[in-house]
Image (cartoon, rainbow, N blue to C red; front, side):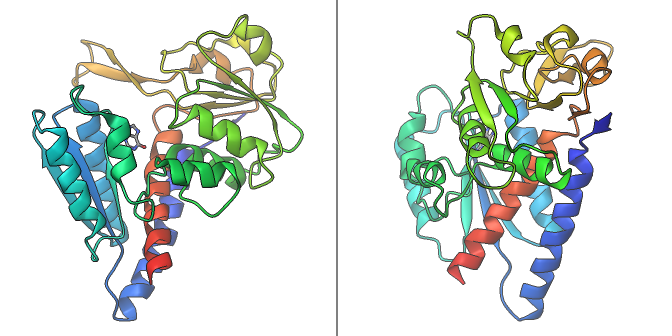
Length: 291
Ligand code: GUN
């Protein structure tokens, strides 16, 4: 059984990016610059954004964290986005999701310039990705593709079941794996909360991508012997015994499933670190496109 080590792979990627940045700087040019906008104080979002900023510093990028109060109006956020769109010293930026309920997420994502949309959430980038044109690919599915490639997991002709149809993970990974590109050419089934008899699908899958957000949902009886399991779940589950008061759980019952399969991503240390590394990669692309 192979553990698909996202932590190590992400570290390798960061070293590659760091090297590119040092060459840029040696040439007397400014480094790539990523900004992150965080509205409110959601604990998980704070952790993710903090991690993104630290990773920028590690590879030598400039980074800016813009923190806005929970009560920030949609209008103020749109103004901030407009400013960032026109900032020549900024190559890319993200608006961390979820946003407070009084802000229309769709309106915000549409306001981000597609050329700076390193999250790949703008319809222009999503559409271009779906049409196999040059585009920013959302970091989590992009990270899964990179992990499958680096571990030389065969996807061509294989049956892949993606569980979850979110715009950020399930939908894009189902598109990417069915395309002709890297980690592609799979026959993809996109299952979701309304799917009947999910187990009959996952049991016949060569590759299962779990992006449902329900802790330990995929159990050993639901998978085929020798399958490849990608776990995108990262749910905080209350645990008084843990100093933080919670533990992070994936969508896969790791203990039992790992005994039956050929390869699996752990949680934490699987897809999560890859997401951050691919955001950096997209930012480097944005910089290279501009310069
Ligand atoms: N919230 C959860 N994942 C993401 C992500 O990849 N990007 C942004 N902006 N928000 C998120």
